[in-house]
Amino acid sequence: MSSLAQGGIIGLIAMALFMTGMPIAFALAITALASVMLFLGPSQFDLFGKMVFDSLNDFGLLAIPLFVLMGNLFGGSQASKQLFEAGEAWLSRIRGGLAMSSVAASTLFAALTGSSPATAAAIGRVAVPEMAARGYSARIATGAIAAGGTLGILIPPSVTLILYGIAAEQSIGQLFAAGVVPGIIIAIMFCIWVYIAQTLEDRSARRADALGGRTAPAVEQRRYTWADRFGSLAKTLPFALLITMILIVLYRGIATPSEAAAIGVILVFVLVALIYRGLTGRQLLDVLLESTNQSTMILMITAFSAVIATVLSYLRVPQDLAAAVSDADLNKWVVLLLINLILLVMGFFLPPVSIIVMTTPILLPLILSLGFDPIWFGIIMTINMEMGLITPPVGLNLYVLKGIVPHVPLKEILIGSLPYVGVLALAIVLFSFFPDIILFVPQMLY
Image 1 (tube, helix red, strand yellow):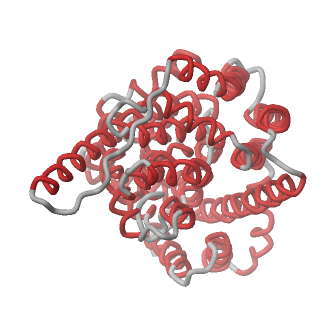
Image 2 (cartoon, one colour; image 1 turned 30 degrees about the horizontal axis):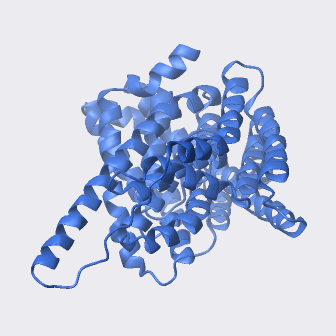
C-alpha cells in the first residue's frame, strides 16, 4: 500500500470520528492510537505515550496557557466596553460608524487576547445591544462582530501562530511581526464592507419608504466633541502600552514568547485590578478555571495531532505528496489554490488549532518545494482559518454570538457574516500577489 493511501486511511478514520460529534481532542486521540497500532504495529504501543509526552515537552507551549489567561482576564473586565466606546467616539459620524467601531475594538482586543471566540464574546456583549438600540440591523451588527472576532487568531499574540511556529519550526517572533500589517489591512477592509453594506441598507430603506412600505428605523448617530474623543482615547492608552511592551520584548529578543506571555499576564492582572476593577474574587476564580479548561483542550489537541503528524512523517506521506505534486508539474499558484480550498473545507468542521497542528507537517515540505516562504504561508494559512470561524457547521464565532443574542435567528447572523468570508478570500489573493505586505516587517526587524 502506498504512503498516500495509508495517509488517506488515517484521514478517513479522523473524519468518521469527527462526524460522531465527540470532542475534537478525543477523536484525535483515538485516531492517533489507531494510527500507531495499524501502521507501526501493536508492539510499538509504548511509543504512543512517548510521542504524546515529547510533543508537549516544549517550553514554547507554555506561552499558550499564559496568553489564554491574559485574554480571559481582559475578557472578564470592563476593558471591552472602554475599547468600544473609544472606537464609537472617533467613528460615529461615518456611515456604519458604530459597526466600524466594533471592528476597531475587536482588532485591539484581539491583540490582547489572541482568541477569536473570546474577542467576539467580549465585544459582542457590549456592541450588539448598543447597535440594536441605535437602529442597526441584526445582520450588520452581528456580522461586524463575528468578522472582527476572527482577527484574534491573526494579530499577535496569537495561539494559532505559536502552534504554527512550533509545528513548522519557524520563529514565533517573526510570525507575530508578520501578522501585524495584514491584521490592520483586513480590519480596514472589514470597515469598508460595513460602509458598503450600510449604504445598501439605507438605499433599500429609502426605496421602501418611497413606496409606502415598512422600513427600519433610521440609524441614530451621536455627536462627540474633540475632548470626548481624546478622553476616550486616553482610556485605551494602557492597552496600547501593554501591546507595545510585549511586542518590543519579543522583537528585540529580550524575552521568549513564553516569558513575554508571563510578563503580559502580570501586567494585565495589575491593569484589571487597579484601573478597570472588573473582577471580583469569584470572577477571578471563574477566569482561572475557564483558562485551565481552554488550555488543557488546546494542548490535548496539540499532543494528539502531533502524534498523527509523526506517524504520517514516518510513512513519508509529506515527502511523497510533495514529490507527486512536483511530478505532476502543476503551476505553483494552482497548488496554492487547491491547498486553500482544502483548508477552507477542513475549517467548516474543525477548529483552527487542530488544522494547524495536523496539516502543517504535511504541507510545509510541499510549500518549500514550490518556493513559498514559510512565514508568509503561516499568515495565509491563518487567514484561511479565519474563514472557518464564521462559516457553518462549526463556525465558533457564529454560535458565540447566538449565545449573546438568542433572539436573533442564526440565519440572520450567518447572512451578515458570509460577505466577510469573501473579504478574507480577497485578502488572501492580495497577499499572494504582494507577499512583501506580510514579509517586510519581519525582514526589517530580523
